Length: 298
Image (cartoon, helix red, strand yellow):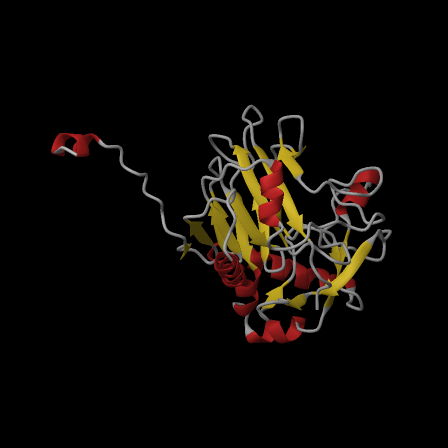
């Protein structure tokens, strides 16, 4: 081959090597050099699992998956979450079942609109909350719609020793928000249930749970849901929850993800909160979520 022909020969595209790079943030890492359409090696799967235990959220950029490929990828890491038929979640149908892939969109074919969502644990009011979720971005707005994640293990570690002693061993009833929404409760939003408020379906879990894989202690509390500490004097319990929720909103505990089309984020629902910033109703935001089944908190 002549030198001129060699110079004109097309070059093979550079393939980025597989690597997991921690973010400069209180949680999170980016997985690089991975096309989720292709089979993963056992070594890659195990490395991703370990990184998820350590960093709590993982980001996969520039993915192009159909629904079948998306499900095949997500279920390498667990079975799809399915709530009990009598404990509804937002996406539950008339039969109580939720779809494997939940559409999160303001485009008329999904749920959750364009309003802000306070930081929360998914499915916390169910007996077996989901272990985590994958969220895949298909369309994103030019402004707003970011997702912020809170490190609940770090939140517990950063509490003072006296508060940790106070809350270790406490239980928390997490009430189902969709029951009051469905019934049009006239009392408005309830952040802490007191005896004068009629109880609804809920599930009791530890306020401080142990992560089933890492063994880390986790402050298992959302910032804007209806809860109750059983056996606690109501005003004392409410004051404690308000204090813990203020702690959870400290900026040094969180990372904010600015979405790009093709992003997949996998978060650990057992060790993080996630919330969403509002975005203009005139802009489109369309994502698909797959949640994975979890175990009873302990």
